[in-house]
Image 1 (spheres, rainbow, N blue to C red):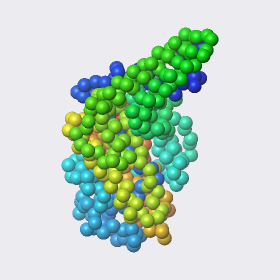
Image 2: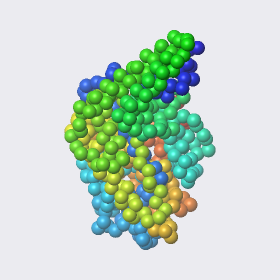
Image 3: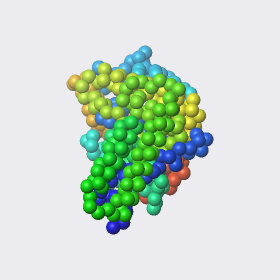
Image 4: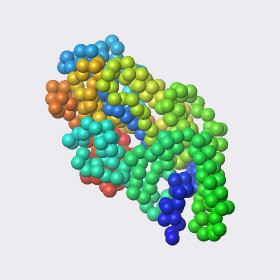
Length: 395
């Protein structure tokens, strides 16, 4: 039996396949690190119309007599558009040229199911197609054809999103490094106990032992490196703050991974949206503000891009529960020190031309993926993003 087949069938494979001994070999000086992409997923369908607000538009206030945000509440970025009151740091990043807002992002024949719409975003499929691999997973397959010595992508979570699952390669999911190290040692001890009780040994078992031992050594090494790498800035003590802190520590320690992924839930604001969205967007704004500040201090910002997205937007008209219901068409935020275009990529959606009560799509989200692959990672998007989509002139 081939070693890879053996590992896949082994009960211990979840650790062994996740970590070939990459960590020790893949710490590099900061000057040698390549381009990086951080993706922050806002799960639940963030209300984009109250995130980027057209405060001179009468239709907006007629559609939202309760939820409509007044001009003096907003962080104005133009004479007609303001960011949500919570987006203070995001407004500053807009002014400094570190932020680009792409409006009206979606896909044809939108689906209002959280799970299905998120699958579409993760897999980059048409709304009537079902794919079992994700767009970033297929990027890993492309980059690691044959073999790959290090995980090019890491998700700061306990489980792996579809976006990061390829046909052959998968990203690495780590909730926190200390727990990961503890799990690795537990797996090795379990293997040694099984070997002690077994009557016969096989060459493949020796290979699995070697892989698990390398995993433990690597996890020890990563934890020791991160313990010596305090960040310059104090991240907020929120889940997103802790996740972004872990990412910046990995980068500052010289971990040579290209993609970092995380998510934040709670954006399904059917009821009492004002209070809930204020709290959620405040957490996003505070954590992202510290993230950018830290990466600038570490001289990592120029080669880092951040994408913030949600699986869909909300209906234009508020509901009867001081909230909004599932819609389509939303904005995507791109942040980077390497933006060629800043501010707004395109105009805000026309509220007089809705699609069945929803904001109309202007940009297919797969154009953004194509742009990130082609212009940021210098990778051919064909075979990774199904179909042909024109890149945007961003980087």
